[in-house]
Length: 459
Image (tube, rainbow, N blue to C red):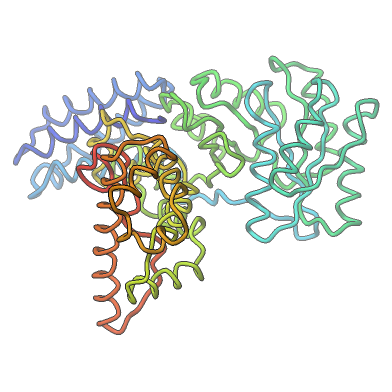
């Protein structure tokens, strides 16, 4: 998981700072020495680390901080502020759209960075925003590159423009833009060819495509797991092509996070998007303040809310609330809720977004397969049993566990958590209704069976 190592180390440093009622200048310097080591171990650029620590120390050793009632909290706030500044402040990380459609977005990168997949992810993301994107296959060198683009494009419902491998990539790009203009496609995403390393031939081709299509965005796709190599590649591309931004892939992997922290400081170009999983829907806009909060273990509630809003159908949520209020909520509804929760992404990553949870789940084994077992249990029931769980006697339960491949204990635990969640959310909806401020609830404690059953999260 991205930033897990650095986040854990920084939280340990902050815990020591909070435990002291009074801080001396030496306390701050000792803490910042540990921060420096944590950043270097995360593969953050040395000069970036040096400048970062120097700035934080200058602000944190002032009398206003050391003499305050909560000096530890003040130092943590300064670290957070400077980390946000390092990642891009409130910089506009959204796509810049052309005043005259179509808006052309050119994707660049080395082979293996995940550029073609990211092209489809970006297209799918923009389609959800109400745009009409077109993918253009400009890579005529890598075997089956165009075929791969067609497959991933189809998976997000976006058309692909392709002229085969015997046409100059510059001509493919130019005609792709023309096709988009004639077919009312507001956005063109050019999937250009990658190379094993930066070379003059590659850069010349990219520059010719740029000069013939006039892209609004020239985005470099880099693999976050390559650490400082990603920063070096970003610098080289920017010097030769002048990129407008960066997209980080594999930010969900076992990466130390150095590339994400360093790229903005080294290139001066914003990180616009991040790939956070293997699914075509696993793409997020890059928000510096939210990312800083994740790195420091403070959670990311806004991103979690956005994921929930995207995953839960609001009309269905309203019906669920009404059914719960009338005590009609059953296991079929429960399964629908679980499926919506699954759409939000990896459970460990979601829990990391909850403030205060990062350190608690560090050594916890979240059972991602629990969803499938719950689904198997409910699917092994008859429609009548799903709608009336009180019918489940010992004989019916034995039949269900045989069909689902689980134990009686697992079935009983799931049913218990279903009832607990149902009761809890009925109380919540009742309180909201009683205040005359009825709201839609997209979900409830539907994490039943994710582990040992100690609480809804299974730990």
